[in-house]
Length: 260
Image 1 (cartoon, one colour):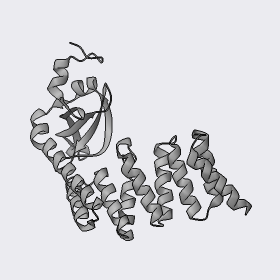
Image 2 (tube, helix red, strand yellow):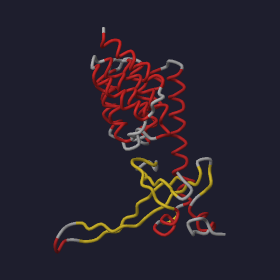
Image 3 (cartoon, helix red, strand yellow):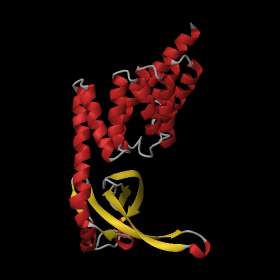
């Protein structure tokens, strides 16, 4: 049997396992690195390990594994054919090292979410920190810890984490949409308006067609007394979605405020 990209199902099964996340696997790639210069230069071979997760019928997101065997950092997209022709399968490593640490991270984050929902900030922070100890770039754990700091008025800690968060490649990824929106709203509620504006502006850089980002940026401008910028941002929001009810109401309100 042949898959749509020309790879046999048998070949795919050597690399990937079917899980509730789709196809998953760990693979490796050897590379040569030149050390030194001139007559002292020499080549050394190294092996890099990656975690791959299916994101489309023929596409996988490839992430490097950190020292704890956790997928971490920005993802590179590869096809199934590229995976099979350019990488080596590491099935045992996926089952014995990577999958267990991924489960530990997810467990810490889930516990953190439960503690935060029950109003237990110290326990929540501890669980998120445990997750970040395994993967310092884990977006869900960073969002959770940031929300914990904001909800309990630890603004200085929140500012430090905020700077780290907006620099991450995956901070506005679709799978983090709920936490993403909640974090932005909490920044604004805590009157951290400069951070809220930067937060939404950064998100707009990554997703220019999301009308809700413009709407939330307009609210941050308004709360900072910048009425003109709020109105122009709402105009952009309504240009994307003329039927955005909240934006229409907000713009009518701004018109009334300006007239008064």
